Image (tube, rainbow, N blue to C red; front, side):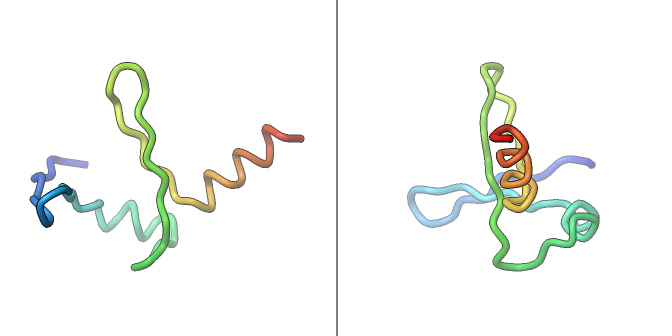
Length: 61
């Protein structure tokens, strides 16, 4: 999916853009929520909130 630049946002945050094809393939739009988690190897995982909720519901059943 290529490389992205880290952009400073205010004094306390950084921003990266998401690939348009990824956003479109998941049917996401401006304002939708994503969940960001980090594993032990410092790898970030970005999941749309609707997918995160579906996985959590399956774990509960």
